[in-house]
Image 1: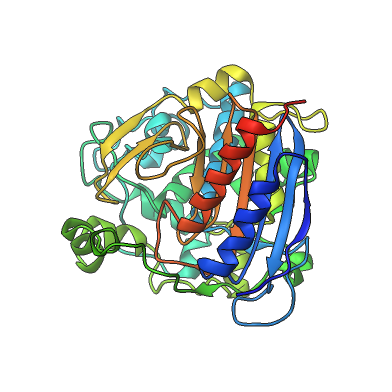
Image 2: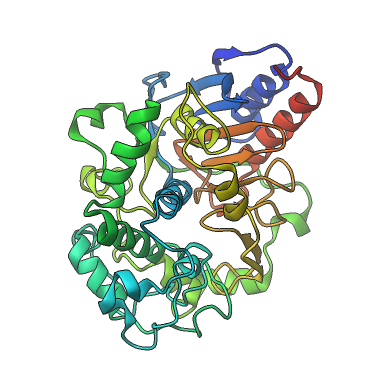
Length: 392
């Protein structure tokens, strides 16, 4: 696909522009945007292709997209900010703030277990409709009534959807606001972020239609064929994997205005690439004078809490407090990087050592969960630029 790339890159960051263009030429990209900050200054601001995965209208600089699980990293910052303000103790039981949650053997679930996917609650025995999932009272009741599927704190498994209801109720219990409201007032407003968890109707016109796309298969038959254990996990309706991703049933239409308007802190954030990158930049340093987390909190957030075989994703994963960490399942820029991908493509992360923060959004959902080839190509180009571009 020949495409005209719009936007700018700072000197030394030209390889990133080239990689972004190649994603359209070689990897099936339809419409996407990329932003990179270094030391609080934007050095990459690119967009190209169509706003809608199935349309011809051009992507604009302010086009936003559903970023799926990349929302989790934004929601985690709300909990960490509340910890800094003395309103949430990461080592306290969830039941201290949410007494009803203690039912069915969950008395020992700590706040940090929720963030590190160690709560033992990746599934719901009775999945929720979208209407119930979007209702904070009904969603919280469903999670509180669920028995853990492993002893909390003893193992980890990706809480694909339940993570959002857990975080949301914690935020709601100590602030009186939902996570989406907290993000809007305490993060997006001070930083001027184009990022929402619960899209206002006034911004609906900016959101492009997303959909499934196919890309070229990796070279080599072995690389193209997933492990049998992974394939079985995603095809067996009784597996934790399938059940975790089916906690909302039927699966919502990601282009449905009702889905966009709901506040689901695990799964339906909507952002521009710049909004996502600017958020991550503000975690590790000031952006126009605003920094969201202290250095000590960032160190806690990116310290390894969970590692090894993931009971849900069936591959080895690494988590800090609300963030995926650099590893084979989710390669980021460097060993100290932390962030979160969105199933199918999107990605946001920060790397404190290099001062880099990245946001990538796309309207083309591939079958990837944590390491999309398009995002990985961009990371490699960013790494090349970091090594050669002067640091201000």
